[in-house]
Length: 112
Length: 112
Image (cartoon, rainbow over all chains, first blue to last red):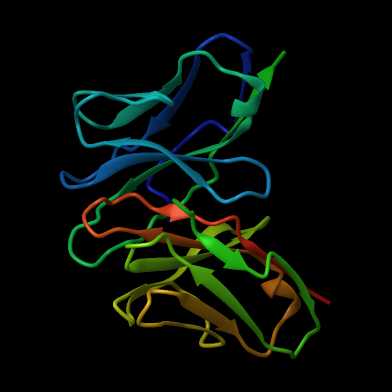
């Protein structure tokens, strides 16, 4: 079972910041928070991941609370092309594990 | 740098037949994972291969199998196809230590 809880859907106005929340209250100390997105019928696309510090890359920012029980993905200036299902995943790649457990994700719709 | 390549992109089979799907990982990636995506169950992990060895397997029946070749290319096979096997099959590769999966565009299988 997925170890994260996300809202089913969200809307965001084009050009505004999209803030996507994720709860992961049972996260373990060695588990990372990953964000992927999937545009209709394409393969999931990696966005960002982090352990406990906030992270930023060219696509997004990831804010992780101090207790690591929740996080927020921020798309600073959403465009219509950002409309997709966003998945928040907690995973550990220690040892041989290369497995992601996907939940239902959040359908983000960017409105013109 | 070429991405993860999956072939064929679309195929139609009938119940009882078998199917083989192919995945070529990103050059230098030695880990290949397979996922099944259906509307009802979402994205589910099938199995993962590293250096020609299966090192992790999801909860799927034995009709689902895979293998990896010395050049890291991977194939998955589904025998005795059922209607419920209709899905998007996704392959992902990972370079050891990066802990970031890169997905292909998927192979969409329809079973009639």
